[in-house]
Length: 332
Image 1 (cartoon, rainbow, N blue to C red):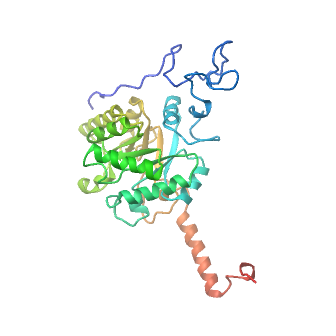
Image 2: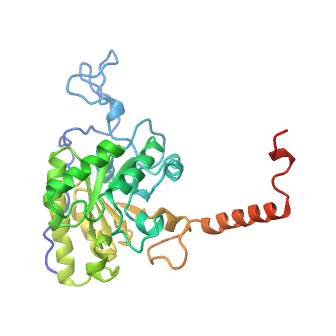
Image 3: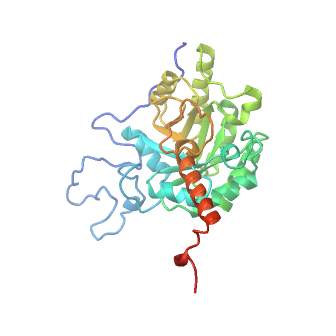
C-alpha cells in the first residue's frame, strides 16, 4: 500500500493550551479571581465569552445521565478522550424511545428502513417524504439522543443545492440534529455547502448501499492497494469538507483502523472491525428481528422475532379457544 495521504490526528502536548471551547480536565481549582472552568462566575452566572456548563461536552458519551440532547461537541470530545460509543438505527417513536432510555447517544434514521420496514429490496426506492415522516417520529419519541437522518437516493446527487434543500427539510420539518449522505470525494462539495449553512453532516464511505445497482450487490470495499488508497482519499475529502463524523461500511478492519488513527473526526464502523471510534447496527439485525441470514458483521443480542411470534401465537390460541377476553378484561 502506498503511503497514506492522511496524517495522524494531533493532540495538544502537555502544557499546551487546549483548543477553543475545551477546558482542562485535571479537576484543579483556578486561582482566586479567575473564572471557574465550568464558565460560571462567583455569583453563579456565566462569565463573558464562556459556555454554560449545561452546554459543555458531557463527561462520557455513553453511560451516566444526561439533561439535554447530544451535540457535535460531545461527539468531538469523545474522539479526543478515545471513548468508544454505540449507534443504532431507529424508524419510529416507540422503538426510538426504548433506545433513548437505554442511553444510546446517537440514533440514525437510515434509509435502511427500505429493507427492514418498508418491504423494498434495497434502499433506493425510499423517498424524502418517507424520511421526513420517520425522522420526525424518532425526534418526538426521544429526549437525549442526537438524531441523524439519511438523505435518500436522489435527494442530493443532482447538485449541492439539491442536498441543501432536502437537508433543510429534515432539520425544519423533522427536527433532526444532523444529516448523513453517502459518498466520499464526489459528495465533498455537498457536504461543504451544508456545513457552511450550519447543518452538521455525517459522511458515509466504503460500501454505499444506495449504489447497490452499480456495485452489483454489497461487496466489501477497500481491498487491494488501489481501492484502499481511494478510500483514504474519500476519508480525507469528507473531513476537509467539514463532516463531523464518517460511517465506514464493509471495509477491511486494518484499513478502518488506519483511517481511525489518521482522522481527527470519529469513524463509525459497520462491518469495519473493532478499530473504529463507534459502531452502528441496524436495530432489527441487532435485536434478532431479521428473518433468514444476516451479514457476517451482525451480532444478534436477542431473538425478538421469536418473542413476538410466540406472543402472537399465544394470543391467537386464546382467542380461538375463548380464553381471551376473560372476565377481568371485560367491562360490566
